[in-house]
Image (cartoon, rainbow, N blue to C red):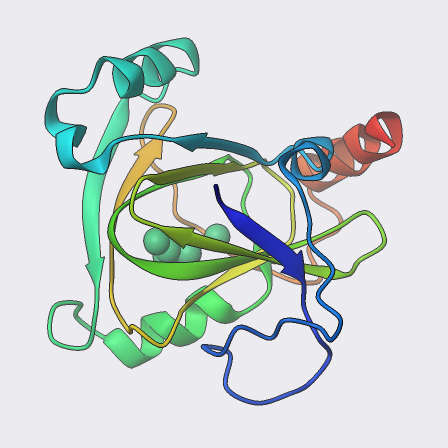
Length: 179
Ligand code: KMT
Ligand code: NI
């Protein structure tokens, strides 16, 4: 099962786990209350997987591509890595399915604390529109992920502060109701 925990406050290499001491784990139910959805799939059959097809159909994830993030494969690697780790939000869902490798998605909880979600092969996640988040590789320095989208993709990241967007306002309202 996917592991998530409250991050410690220490600075330093983002690719380290930053587990607090003692470690405070976060479960799927708690993630769901933040609007974060998670599925476990068999990444070896992503090309022909009825379970994946079902999710895509139900949630209208019509568009997809595959991105490989490692030094030798991704153009403008350093710049992109930096952008991914800037705290930001999107006006649409961010949907990622890890096909190989691993990495961390950090999301803010309702009290603005960082929760770190450790994602590896077979893990699929949806971050809701308007949630503040960021991504980093871990010490493996490699991830291959499917990116999905409802309709034509818009990758624009709005760095924090981005509180004036409707998507943010709606998300804050959702949080208040799901508390
Ligand atoms: C993003 O938007 O943060 C990315 O595409 C990088 C993460 S994909 C595992
Ligand atoms: Ni993002």
